[in-house]
Length: 102
Image 1: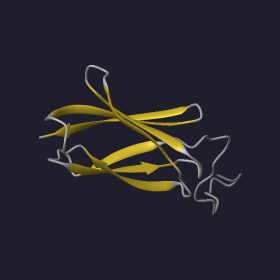
Image 2: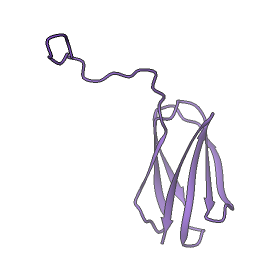
Image 3: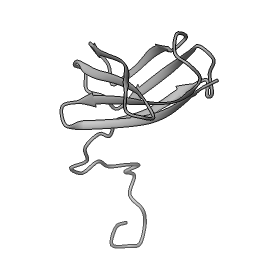
């Protein structure tokens, strides 16, 4: 807002903001395969860890990333029905999402 009480033409501004990693799944719930959408990730390698609700590691892999947005297919067809935790780790940033397999 300027001195006359009018708004400026600036639509948005980013001041010392760190990009957050956000995760989403499609479809939810799923039967065999779902797709993890990762947003706000730096264009470098990140780690994906999938655990059951007891903390047992089901899958883990390093994924080389070249974009700030990434889709990762998640195949849990050989795992039983239940709730799983998908965790993306890059440097000191960690994001998690719950996945329900029918």
